[in-house]
Amino acid sequence: MAKMTSVYFVRHAQPVHGYADDRTRPLTEEGREDAKAVLAFLRDKEIDCFYSSPYVRSYDTIAEAAAYYGKEIKTDERLREREKGTDGNRHGMFERRWADHDYHEEGGESLHMTARRNIEALRDILRENEGNNIVIGTHGTALSTILHYYDPSYNCDSFMRIIDWMPYIIELDFEGTEVVAKKEHLYIEKKFQGKERADKPARKKLLYATGNPAKLTAMKTRLEPLGLEIIGLQEAEAERQRTLQEAEAERQSALQEAAERITGGRGKAEYIARSFFTGKFVPALIASWPQNSQAEQECRSSVDITEDGETPLENARQKALSYYQLYHMPLFSCDSGLYIEGIPDEEQPGVHVRNVHGKCLTDEEMLEHYAGLARKYGDLKARYHNAICLVIDERHVYSAMEESMASEPFIISSIPHKLGIQKEGFPLDCLSINIRTREYYYDMIADELDELAVEDGFLDFFRRFC
Image (cartoon, rainbow, N blue to C red):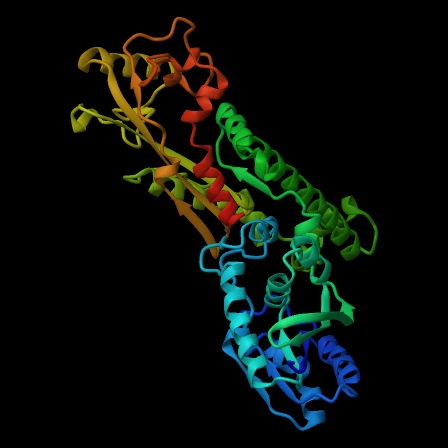
């Protein structure tokens, strides 16, 4: 019969958040103090050996206990925490990973990948230390993948239950490599904010850098499943103007206070009159005169939105970065290129869908221009290639132009639909015909149009980066 082996998994104490290098992220002062509770618990457990993730926060959490027993801590690279990619701990990512253990964000690991190496390390430790009492310094996700491996009912809710417990000690008793008992022993709840991000997230506000109401409405509908709050340029500009007005009101109030302070409270009128005759108070007032902050000056400045890229991706990026300089908030911009088969290069619209020969066309002028091309060359087979650029801040800029964002090929007819333009900002829908059914888009039902839409590509993009 196999001997009983007891493993005390110790999730690390509170680490410093926002630390650049995850491997060397240290414990906070409070975390180091809480690590003493780990020693207090393990003091009478007759520990035979100590293992740890190589990450500093896990090693340091069990260091005092190892020193008490006079034991070396053996680090094993396989025990490290899940490798986190881009925005790996943002809202929705916890649930998505636990729903699909093979899913991982760009640059990150899936739960399966994390579990595979942690279980491999654990089995080696059990084989080498049968019948011993073992301590393993670990992490929240790494530990959770081990617990799920031995108990498949351990799920996202189970993970969220312990997310703010730092440190946390759970004991698994093994006969060979089989778990025969499990006991929770210690936890100290801390403010990690993981639970807030996952359970009670604030709706993320994003500016869609468009002044086209129809495009704004369409994008709000497209991104509705993600729970994002989307605003347009009109709303963003209104907010900016309110901010400017509030700043100006504060500046005027401070100016009045400065004048009264310099004049000894005798009032602005008296001060101005005396300053003209004596010049006595002018230097002092100028020195205390409230100045516009740099942020206000930047906010007052306008930007020249340049769109001279050769591809939709270049234009989307140019617009997004320019608008970010004006509004200083998370935003995204989209751009499209219309590509038509069988027409000369000089007539190919590309990124200049609405701008023809240097002129920005109205909806009616666009309708006439593209109907004219169809009359000249016959029905046109066309496709939109779409691009997007998302700016979270100056260091986090993401862009894409992927096949999943491109429209299905369609026909541009020379004959407009009998209803004419029905949606302002989308005049070509009046000429667009489904290649397969030969129906005008205007005659198709919503479900059929959904099959032609590009929601999946945009949704996947925002899921990756928001």
